[in-house]
Amino acid sequence: MTDGTVAHWIGTALARDAGVRTVFGVVGSGNFHVTNALTAAGARFVAARHEGGAAVMADAYARVSGEVGVLTVHQGPGLTNALTGLTEAAKSRTPLLLLAAEATAPASNFYIDQAALAAAIGVIPDRVTAASTVRNDLRRAYRTALIERRTVLLSLPLDVQAQPFTDVTMPPIRIWPRLSPAAHTVTALADALTSAERPVFLAGRGARQAKQDLKLLSERVGALLATSAVSRGLFREEPFSLDVSGGFATPVAAELIAAADLVVAWGCSLSMWTTRHGALIGKDATVIQVDANPAALGVQHRIDLGIPSDVATAARAVTAELDRRGQQASQGYRTAEVAARLAAEGRWRDVPFEPEREDGRIDPRTLTIALDDLLPAQRTLATDSGNFMGYPAMFLAVPDEHGMVFTQAFQSVGLGLATAIGAAIARPDRLTVAALGDGGALMAASELETVIRLGLRDMLVVVYDDEAYSAEVHHFGPHGDSLANVTFPPADLAAIARGYGYAAVTVREPADLEAVGAWLAGPRDRPMLIDAKVTRGKPSWWLEEAFRGH
Image (cartoon, rainbow, N blue to C red; front, side):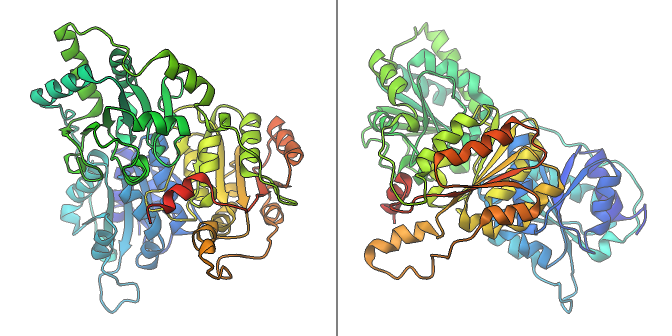
């Protein structure tokens, strides 16, 4: 297939007219030409070893870069292989465009109902129907991903891809003004903030562009600042930051949030994880939710007022209303006592603990605190799912709201390594830390080669290796159930990593981390993997909390 076809135009238009810089995928015959057209027009193609990994890489890249993630796959199995990563992206409302070849003849072995498959997992299905409609079809799908922050499947039927098409530009996409709050909701929110004695702001992903506005408003009304896990780092430098709300919250943060008389959720869904199944929000507290997506208001938790609005716009409007009233700054929850407690107890590493003892194994808290001290401050953390995940997520500091990529909306094991790859491509200036359990590391092991092939030398893979699917061990073990199906014999993950070309070390005690210090010192000519043999005695604190919700 040469220039002058639908496939060629789609790839060219995305790179040339939409400004797509990076594309992820696995190439088969059905997406061969559109992918070649993308690269010929200047986009970088990142080849994964599995479509599932490619989908997660595109998701993570979009989250860190702020661009629309773009993914290209073969028809049929190319799409089905990507489903778990696509489900994560859809649940997270990641702006992502999937270009999937499509076999439309029912007799084809590759034939599946791609639109129905997409709809079943929350992905928006779309299709290029003919050469005569391709300009508007592509524009519509890309616009949905960009403006509505949705994951979109654009099916590319094989026969349509081959149709001739004159090379013209894609119609421009108009970005509308941000949604503003209604005047009466601004008044109501200003009233609530004025009367509150212990206000708390909970900021989610939708608040990332409003950091300064929320900071100034919180200072004005004396509010404490907390985030959902996906926005950790947003208020890192603020003295009245509680860090993360929910299952990851420190004891002092949980106590202060639970005692709030007003909770304002800014671009935050108030999910069961952020509210500890509702237990973190007092039954008498006033709850106000501000979100640019009206459909999100009041879905996850009861609210007293829902404000459909862009977060930054709403925060500025409330500040202007307080100015109009001549309202002076109030102390609110920002007392000297609270400041002292946060300075002494505000981080998990400040909470005293007695390390677990197990021969040949290291307590995951001891390990992670030591790594936090070793690693450079400018880092990106990608965390897989499992019993271990709270330790890297909360004991490793991140520099800002872009410092942790948390692909946990679908709670799938095995996404962490691909997440780290996508993040590393978006932010090559930072050390990328992939924190994995042994189950997730082995599940995604094929992408270890991708790290090497892409030359991602500033990648540190940390495997919390307890030789089990430990969430299940700790969930069912106390009931006397057999654990034979969720425990495994030892594996030398360091040796596996060396086989791929990594520097690697097995860590059983803090002294073993000297090898990591040497790698960090340079020349870092290859990525490094730590096979940390961690203690297995009990579940992590957050998992104990999560079990109470089952």
